[in-house]
Structures are given as structure tokens and as C-alpha cells.
Image 1 (cartoon, rainbow, N blue to C red):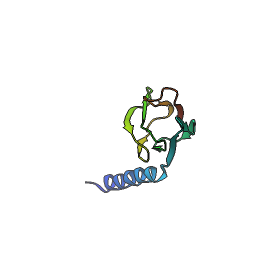
Image 2 (image 1 turned 120 degrees about the vertical axis):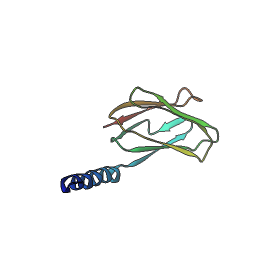
Image 3 (image 1 turned 90 degrees about the horizontal axis):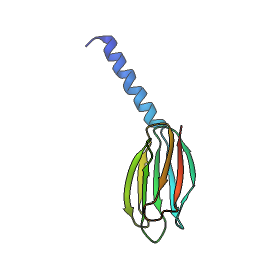
Image 4 (image 1 turned 45 degrees about the vertical axis):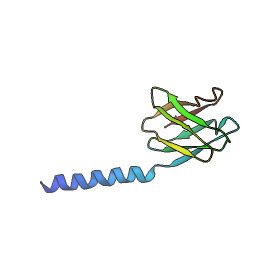
Amino acid sequence: MTFDKIVFGIALVALLAAGAANAAEYEVVQKNKAFSPKELNIKVGDTVKFTNEDNFFHNVFSLSDLKTFDLGSYPKGEFKSVTFDKAGKVEVECAIHPSMLMIINVQ
């Protein structure tokens, strides 16, 4: 391996580590059959933690082309997380409570 390849490899690892260090975690609360906040602005690489604070089960899913996921159903006091890796708009819903809707804008 040449010196240039070693330096490039070290620089690449440093850039990837810096990107991960800059990532943030946000919390969205599920309470009173609603997401709070109803809209959230984040950056690519950030993670959103969905915490159930109601006394019944919630589900979190998205069918958005940008980020499709289904976190399943979970009870009060539990949370599940999603990391967003592309920029755009993501609609998030609860399969159990159809009136629950939020928007995540990934920049």
C-alpha cells in the first residue's frame, strides 16, 4: 500500500467519524393520540426517537418514497428510533390511530 492510499484512507475515516459526530437525535412524543411536534426539521444523518407516552399502544410507520419504515406497535414507556439518510419530506403516521400524522423535513 502506498503512502498516498494510507493518507486517503485515514482522511476518509476521519470524515466519516466527523459526520457521525455531527448527527443529532430528536424526540417525537406520542401523547393524546397525537405526535408532538407535528412537524420537525432535521438534517441528513439525524435520528428521531418516537416515544409512546399514552396508556395504549401506538405504531409508527411511513410509506414515503424517501424513507419507508414500520416500527411496529409498542406500549407506553417504550420508544423506537429511525435514522434519516436522504434529504426530503417524510410523512409519518400511526397505523392504530389514523388521525395521527406528522411531517419530518430532512435537509
